[in-house]
Length: 240
Image (cartoon, rainbow, N blue to C red; front, side):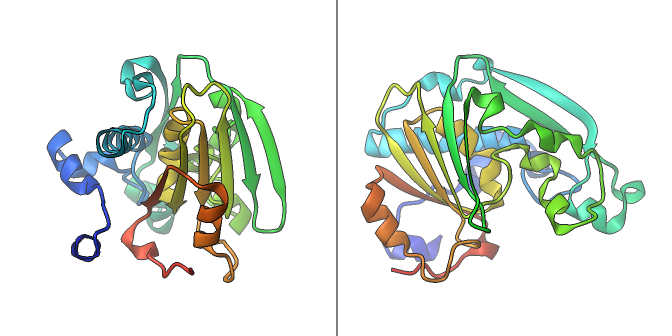
């Protein structure tokens, strides 16, 4: 935070907001996994949108951060996260996981670029585009391969980790375009940002080629805002 401030980079310290809005910091995270809960990701998306609106006058429909406009489907004792897999479910227990989805009409076009030069295109409502419901079938399983390890319950949100994902909101009421530089913590945030703006571009720097230039991509798409949303362990030096 000190480094960002000294270099004039604006930031939102979600740690402070968590402390103000929740009684217990640990209730915001899974027990068996290092990621935050989908409920926390939804909350974080609201904080980010409020900041962008207050600071840069970015327009968005306030409905998308109204919790009453969403339904929740709870899968009880369903998710065994990476930490739980290390120590065993008899020690850690198994987490619940919540599928949060809007009650209002949505239509999203999602373009996902994979590591091995594969690209998929899906258009549909929230539950059938940005949510990959088939990943919820992996109930408390231990991975038999690296591929299955990526297809855990948490990866129902956005489908998991990819080099690049582009989401176009076909029912957007604005022309706002966001670029998100992310790691897996953004899985639970991106879906809710994507229904608030016209276009969301997502880059995971861990999986992009070494010669990829973030600056060139910014110049190409000309976003209204660039968000860096990743944990400190994944900080990398961006190529210019």
